[in-house]
Length: 400
Image (tube, rainbow, N blue to C red; front, side):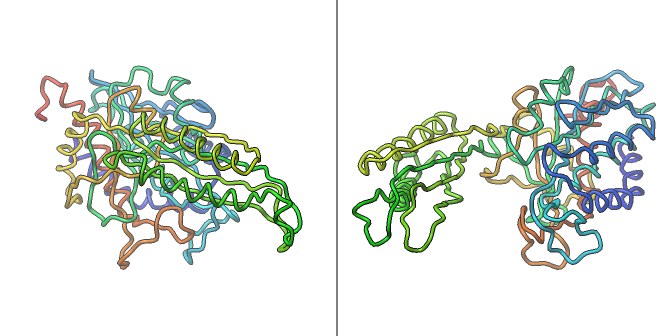
């Protein structure tokens, strides 16, 4: 069955590309993906696949019931875009000002749609059930995964697989990691409340910018001097705002940033340590502060057995030339919530565009992918789904 499925996917690669380009031209931001969700639901309804809409928000869930008994395998793709102006000079550039697919979610969606269509056509030969999870709002916490799970998208699911098109890695490469693979991603906001005044009379003020600068400097010491070096962690101040005239000392300064960790104890420690630094700086300056720490997605932790299974499965994909273990990534992903509920693994599919030495990174205004990677992603997810069923079939030939 798998070889026949691969051939059908090859024949439909052009369809994947057309879908991806349509979605690329019509992106929607997180929690606003009404048209994209309708497009996905309509695609399945036209081919007779049962679909549930508005799952946990704008999420879509389709189910393909095989004719043979088996397990329930979930495959997930996200479909939200980013608030970035598309600067690519291509025919399929975004038509929505200030919004673009700068992370490959359009490709994820095209891949899963065509794979779902093909599996549906072959359902008489299919064992078990395939659940196709089209998730909204991956890019912006609290994300779409958690409410979709709470709405039942994983009910009865035995295993979940997901992939991310990875533009920085060559076509034909699959990257994996067992255990922690992507970091917990948190956000903090600090407001320092000083006392402004004339720039020529600083002694009569409490300079919020100077205090904020001290805080920024001391925050750099959390990871370098207070966290065990064997525990990966990042503390980044992404914005520092105290807009004012050139000769005025600002009343307030606002800092925002992100914290990335894998160890839950380190996560707790950094949250507390930021406030201790802030408290000390403001106490010495006799000013006040506000501090908000928002916990985002937990770390993505792949299950060992399912990751080993995935590595073996993709060996049947001719277009996969290299399967390589990846270092832990400090980026975040709400696929973590699926893996907290059921076993599974999240992997990366190389999608570096042709003819470039270094691809534009994800979230860049000129970001793009190699569309040949859509086929590799589809085949890799197909191999995981089908071979997982074979693994539990009496007649299956696949072994771990």
